[in-house]
Length: 228
Image (cartoon, rainbow, N blue to C red; front, side, top):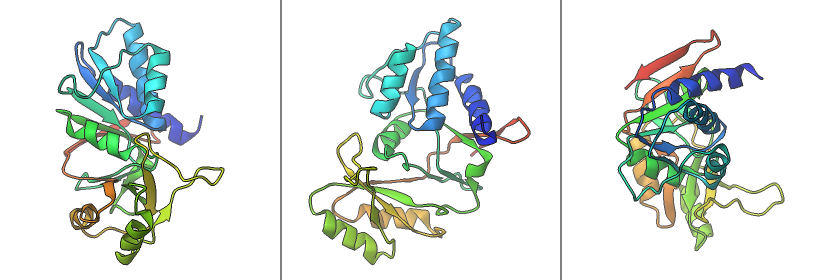
């Protein structure tokens, strides 16, 4: 196991420890969220009982079913807690960049429907400013060339994400993903507004104003808790 994986597992186990009996939990997507699902399944094996988990992707749902976690629909109840990973966490503002796994729409829906959001990361995900890597933007297939042109006009150099066989990547909702090279984002809120103003854009990977608790696995073996 790599040092990064150890950090993520430590933080995931700390997040799973926050789950209380009877809670309805939002379950994120990606490798870190998978570790949370595994840690939560271990707690259920020790006697914890929850109302259920709302998965943000088909992959998470399949893993939860395999490990015996009860699942629920987002429409059924308000969520007590959502636990997810992040690609970047901006230090100071707690703004998040997510969606490089392609589940940003469902992740944002679950995050905003939850009373509390806990983000699980290794220390390498902490950045002074968002935009170190690409920003995913989810868009509809209809008129995609026009949408990509409008993204390019913002100076974002969008690249349509592809599968290994060259086919366009599609989210669980059937949408396309454009990975945008933003560089350091000086005003994430302004960029988010500009992107949402483009017809054809479904959602962006900018997760702003959510006031998350961030659990950071560190190389020293500690889990650092950052509260916004």
